[in-house]
Structures are given as structure tokens and as C-alpha cells.
Length: 201
Image (cartoon, rainbow, N blue to C red; front, top):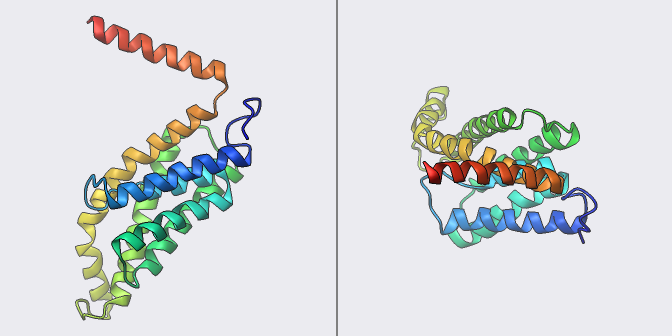
């Protein structure tokens, strides 16, 4: 149980609670709350899990989110590529942020991570679409692979837009939650004062 004396996410209880919220968010926004084609929260959950919760949750959060939502939605052999993509993204989040303790320049680094994750997911899963193609939509040539990438560009666009919004948002929330109480109060007071100015104007 988190005592309040240690930074948040430094004990098993708070890590598990945060992980369960991330898993539920990933499942709900993949199965019920559709914000757009290929806009999802699993990338965000995988990256912040790796950054703040450690290696176990960096793997468990995206894997559980995908497994449960795939039971609901159904899937094909492409799950080999989608699941492995999210696992790699979570592991990368762990290596870049958690292990090296890189929390400075959070906005820029989260934006870069979001863009990199989207491009990697696009390249890896569209390779999977081409490789597993049993309907002969794509020739088993470099040209056929390029066709698969070309047709996947609209999905990359939507995924990139979503990740560039939600990855920094998730990182900002987790960063705020991990701050000392005094820092939280100071930031909250600043936001409230800004809101007050807008209301009065």
C-alpha cells in the first residue's frame, strides 16, 4: 500500500493500481469508445508503464489490454505482429525512461517516443499484413510490400495523430502524480489562477 511518504509508483500497490487503470483504458478505447480509426490508448499505456511502473508492467499492460480486447473483437494471425509491436514499445519505454531515469524534457521526449512508436508499429504490422497475406492481395515481392505500406498510410496518419496527443498527456498525468504534494499544490494554484483570469476576461 502506498503510504504517501514515498514517491508514487515506488511500491507494488500503487504500480498495480496504475497498471489496472491503464489496462482498462486500453481495452475500453479499443472496444467501446472509438475516437477514430487506429486511435488507441495501448501505445500510451505501454510507454508510461515502461517509464514509471517498470519492466513487468511494461509487458503486462499492453499484453493484457490486447488479449482481452482481442477476445471481444476477434483477431487473426496478425496478432503475432500487433502484440509483439506493443511489447517492444513497452520495453523501449522502460529502456529509455525508467532504466536511464530520463525524465527531463518530458514533453519533447514523449512526442519523439509517440512518433517513433507510431512509425515502428506501422512498419512492423504492415510487414505482417504483407507476410501473412493469404488472399494474394500483395505480391510476395518488394513491390508488393511497398503496396502494403502505401495502403497503410491512412492508418499511420490517424495513429500518429492520436499518439502525439495522448502519449504526452499520459506522461504529463503520471509526472504530475509523482510530484511531491507541495509541487502539486503549486501547479494546481497556477492553473486555477489562469482559469480565473480567463473567466474574468
